[in-house]
Length: 235
Ligand SMILES: [Zn+2]
Image (cartoon, rainbow, N blue to C red; front, side, top):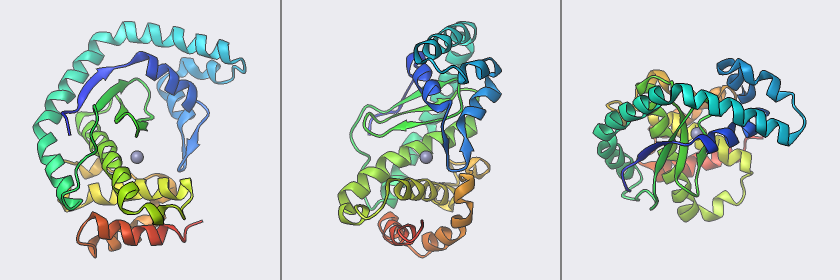
């Protein structure tokens, strides 16, 4: 995989905040989290008119980006340097865990974001990270999102049949639980600070069972095989 690149992307950030203002998932209210960081967006949430909403978000983001531009660029530069030192090791550990399967080709980009939703876009190999997070937390976000990219590519190729029987939610649940269990394991202790590996509230009750399964699996393929059968029983 190519080196991960880091950029700001205001347009994408606006789109995502429009989208996430009314999203809940895995026990998290993303809209509430956006407003906690940006109280001025509270009035935007209640706007029913889409054009008005877009406009209000645009004005707010324009202003925010203008004021915080230097600080954002500084943070981006800082995390780029930190990640560069760990990148090769992370790729090696991960591809080894996947039995030599490699990260899918793509132009990997991490976009700084002023909201804390951190979505990823599988197709384009890009994702957002909240720029105000401490570097160790951002490192976790990066390892987490990159793991999604190889995970989904891997299961699409190796577990094509099995994943047909899963709902979209089940697959999402599994991908998130998979990440938490794997990135919390000793395999990544040099790179990931475990303090920041936090499951979605709705997944908490499954973590223990998956951790046991992980320990009994010799690689990603085995863990996924067993994991898929556990998650397929989940409602
Ligand atoms: Zn995730």
